[in-house]
Length: 430
Image: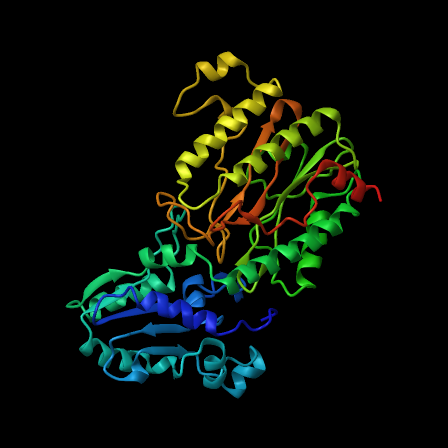
């Protein structure tokens, strides 16, 4: 891995929090992700399943974590199963974790090779009554591919039909949404790498540059700072491309006078950052562009103040909508009749700002977190209002990542990334 090894105490704490919520005499099992095929012998780069990583720090394919806090013997309470390494594997793929290295990473003392899994599980099933399966119940999930986890669940149900079934996901939704201090440091590090990429492109962007050339500058800076790369597929959207919310082609020329919406950020140690800035191709905003930009910035700043413990996401979004409506009135994009006659299910401001203002962020860019439950301290949220005006040929979104504090305003992990019009123009013209 490119990243520095994480202190295993983080994963020890995470396992302790999870097992404290398990039912008596229960086993929980977590599988790594598959390496997904493309064609012939080509595969996508391996990306570890975030749940097994959260609980163990193991960042390797064909790994299994088993937790059994009520096991009769101490060595059965936490077990890792890993792909056995060999000289041949080391030559062709690079060495896999040894048992000693796996302990150093995870703090788990009992490590078996993967071929022993069924034999060890058979014994533990005789001591247990319930198994926790790891389903994906994220509110944005839309999964068509059968995962390694899904295959395991089918196999297990056929092999051990008499056991009760419980779900890991409801526990993890709550645990993963509230970050430990070590996790906040890792997310901050990802944000710091993102800052370096953004500052790099401010001096690079000029009229006629291609969107993909800007993307290349970002990835260069990210990888040279120990990131695997983008935390998500980057959006480099110039001109009217910015009005396509998930524009990812990044293949157009950036024209003089246009704006570029940059929704691009680095990951670090599997933790995400999530940045959006909008900058002028020519290094100067027009008066109209500046007016809209500052309106979006005011909405972002006011929205950030509302991210406090106890806030409910739905009410928060409603209040942000009111602020946005006021700004759109000031810009002449809405009039009072539009607001007075609006459909409550699709308010007038949605014509120009149609997405949510914030989402959880962490190991996943759209991280675990239950939006119907009150916000808590140490949750990390994005704040990303936008105004999209196809008829004027531009769209503007501004996004930061913030940590909810026990008291006071949320802490901005991106506070050092240029955001004010004057600073962006100054850096682009220096």
